[in-house]
Image 1: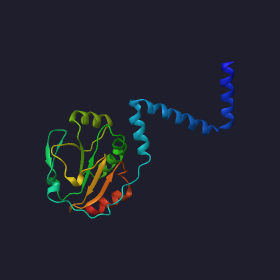
Image 2: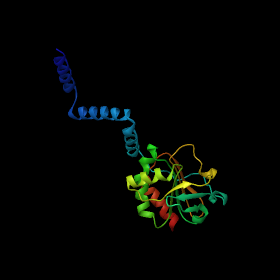
Image 3: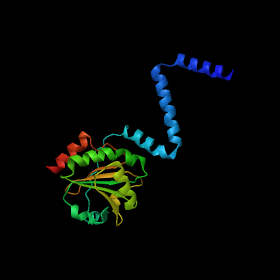
Image 4: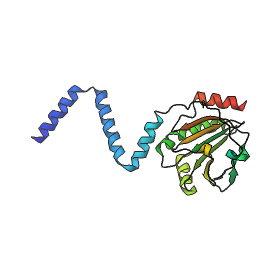
Length: 200
């Protein structure tokens, strides 16, 4: 009796739905189930965000970094300490992120592609407050090659954000050209055109 009931419900469902409708229903159900489990939740969230990201917009406000804004220290995963002032005069891409942050994870592939294209022309500074061991494990597992740093002094107020990821694109003259909170597609044509203009 019970088997007949479910068979009848399935028959009614199939009559109302197209094949594509059934496929989407199953995918939606699988997505909901995946969101229940912590192990798969971060992957699902970052994938959804990745496919809904847009290119960041150029900043409307004209803001220049002061000398004090360059006066903070970061350390790479090999233990080399760098003061940001050492990179003054270069195009800077600065990104604050964390391994537990789905929006951060979502934009990483686009940052890697941007890095692959511009790594010899500008400085990439991806900063996290996590331990170097956690960062090293994450970077190696994902196969990323962009440079990752940890903070060794407090970042200036101009780079402070209430949420991550937070990204900044700085011109050689110290102008804040882009300021973006949240995930973005960093390898788009608009971003590249702006970088190319700054590199001329």
